[in-house]
Image 1 (cartoon, rainbow, N blue to C red):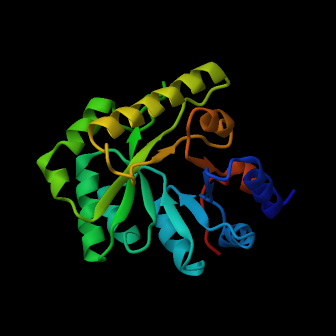
Image 2 (spheres, rainbow, N blue to C red):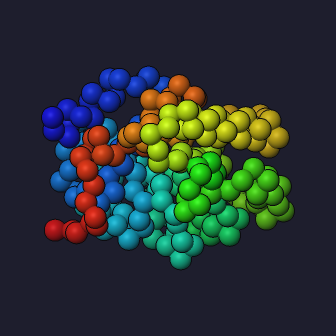
Image 3 (tube, rainbow, N blue to C red):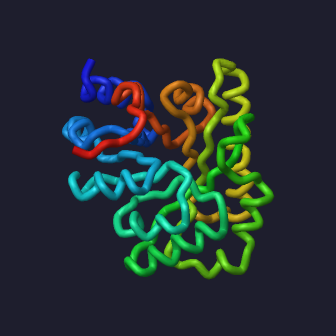
Length: 227
């Protein structure tokens, strides 16, 4: 099947309430346009330098989710247009997002990224670190960011029981933060978990956003080479 058929099949399969981020990292603009022409408008990238090359070449109504580790010195390049930054893992990064959002007269939605996997290489907070951020005097002053929920990546493994347990941990983190910091905040509602290999388990465990790339676009290339 082609990209459009793959995308339509997934959209028909997942519940309507679930947001699908089509992960287009390393994929050329032509592939993204093919997916966009189905009517889908939410895409995810994990490298700022790749995103800022692609974004001007694509329709302005695309909602870009940044899903990779983000360095503070790269925030200024994506702040003018990014719809959501899913990978906030420090107060320092949140401060810079707020600063750059203010410069662009925007409020940028963010997700707190948690480390739920067994791999040490993955980025993310633990619950105490997240609570420290949300209770810090600095965070309370930020007017140009909005914490909309949580994000996490499960261990890359065939052990479905382990994956399910990790997703349940993230769901519990969401519930804990909802009760302690966002009790009456309707915008705190997103749980971004689940990728091509495990999105079905993630949906069963309460995901509201799934990030799917390879089963839409095919196996990813090693790096993006603009035409």
